[in-house]
Image 1 (cartoon, rainbow, N blue to C red):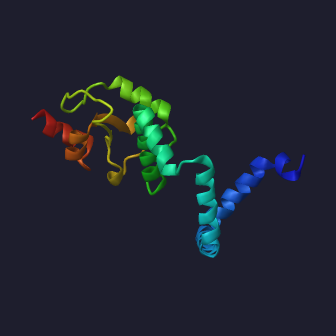
Image 2 (tube, rainbow, N blue to C red):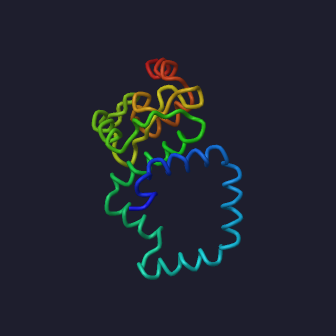
Image 3 (cartoon, rainbow, N blue to C red):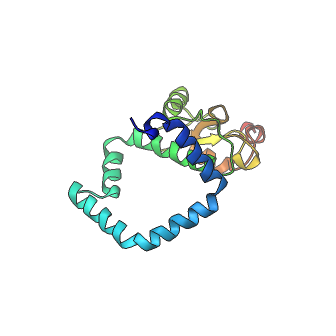
Length: 165
């Protein structure tokens, strides 16, 4: 057993800390390296796709067609994780399992009462991220696309006053 296997957690922690401390330099290095090895990387990708017979887009399309509900949950989680990884705070409570439980609790839109189906449901932040809300499961509420679009960046209380009128 080598040093890395014995100290894997420590090595990963040191690597992550280095990246946080030198993020700009690391990104410049990777961009420079990509430019130098672009043709080699593209050739490898083409060979990989030829050997497997499908591109990433084709595999993604097959997953979407075979499991539309699962695919939608994964994409929602991915979208929210991307937004939360930016400038928004996240406590890690938003997972596929947590989203499934949340969607199972809400079969109708709490704002307008329309039935929530896989093709018309959306996740709304009660306190919008742009207003300082957190990306946590307790700040999320399933609703229909129409209501989520109308609500926009309004706080939950203000939106409920409009809905109840």
